[in-house]
Amino acid sequence: MRGSTPPSHDSADLSVVHCVPGLAACLGGPSRTVVALCEALARCEGVSVSLLSRGVPGEPSLSSAQSRVTLRVPVGRSRLSSALGLAIRGELSLIGGSSRPALAHSHGVWHPANHWAARAARRWGVPLVIHPRGMLEPWALGQKRLKKRLALGLFQRRDLDGARALVATSEMEHDGLRRLGLRQPVAVIPNGVDLADTDAGAPSVDRRADRERVVLFLSRIHPKKGVLELVRAWSEVVSAGWRLRIAGPDEGGHWGQVATLVRQLGLGDCVDYLGPVDGERKAALYREADLFILPTFSENFGVVVAEALAHGVPVITTRGAPWADLETYRCGWWIDVGVEPLVAALREAIALTDEERAAMGARGREYVTRFDWQRIAEHTLALYRWILGQGERPDCVRLD
Image 1: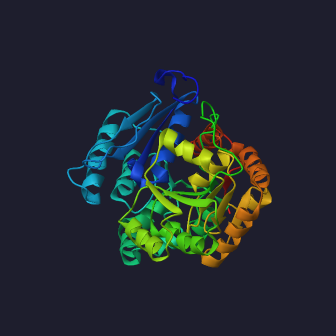
Image 2: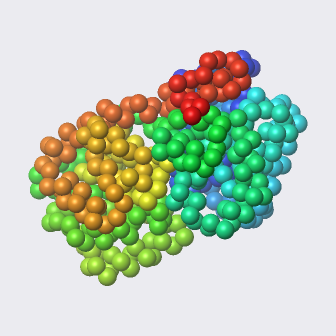
Image 3: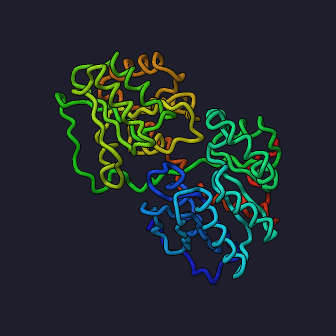
C-alpha cells in the first residue's frame, strides 16, 4: 500500500466510479496507471473510489493494494470484447441500483466497456469524464481505420460529445483532441510514477570499468513501439562491451518477427529477450541499465520513460512521445522517428563517459519528481470538484 491510511468511506462526500476495459498486466500502461490513480485518489480525504474492469477467462488481473479502492472485476464468458462489455454492463447496473456515484471516469475509447460506462453516466444523470489514453492519437486512429469509423458513427462520437470533460496526459494529446473537433474542457494531467525510493533495499550494481554496459528497452513487444527499428539501428552501432536488453510481453507474436531480424543481422551475441518483467526484476533491470530507449511511433505519455528517469537512467525516445523535456532538462534525447535518428542518438550516448551518463541520469531523477502520484491525484480531484460546482477551475483545465 502506498502512503498512510485515509479516513473511512463513511466520511466520503465524493464518490467516483472508474471504468477501464482491462487490468491484465499484458495490456500495458493503462492497466497499471489506472490502478495507481485510483489508489492515490482513495488516499484523498472525503473521496470514495470504485474501479470497474472486466476479467478475461484464464488471465489474472492486476489488483489494488489500497483497501479503500472497491475493485469490481466481473469475468466475461469469453474473450470477445462484446461479451466482456456486457459483463461490465451488468456490474454498472448493480452500482446504479445501490448508490449512484457523483461522477463517472472512463479510461479509453472504442471498447464496449467504455460505451456502457458512458450510457450508465447518462442513465444516472451524472457527469462523465473520458480519459482517451492515447487511443485518439493519429497513429492509433490509423489502425483498424474502417472499424473505428463505424464505431464513431454508431456510438463513440456521441459518447465523446457527451463527456463533461476530457483528460489528456500531455500537451501533444490535448492538441490532437482539439484537431478532432472536441470542444469541451480538456484537463492536461500526466500519468504518474511511483517515486518511493527506487533504490531502497536494492542490491549493489556492478559498476566496474570493465563491465558490460546495457541499453534497455522495456515495453510491449508491438509494432508501435519501434522494436524492429531499434534492432536495425543496433546493428549499425553495436559496440564491444555493450549489450541490448529487450524486455516486455510479446503482443500478437511480434517477437517472432524481431527474433528473425536479430538472427538475420547476426546480433544473437549482443541482444537478449527477457520476456515480461515486473516487480523487483523490473526495478533491477532499470538499475542495471546505462541507457533506456523507447523508439515508439506514438505515445500519449510513455510511463516507462518516467520510470527510467526515476531510476536515474538517461533516456532516448522519439517525437512520437511527449518528452521534449528530455532535452530541456538535459537528461536524454528526443529524436525523430526512424532508424537513422536512432543510430545517431545511440552513437552519441555510447560515446559519453560513465560519469557523463550518470550526471544526465541524476538530472532526470530530479526532474521526474513532478510526476508523483499524489500530486496527480490532487489535480484530478480538483477537476472533479470543478465539474461538480464545488471549486474553482484548476490551472490544468484548458477551455481553448
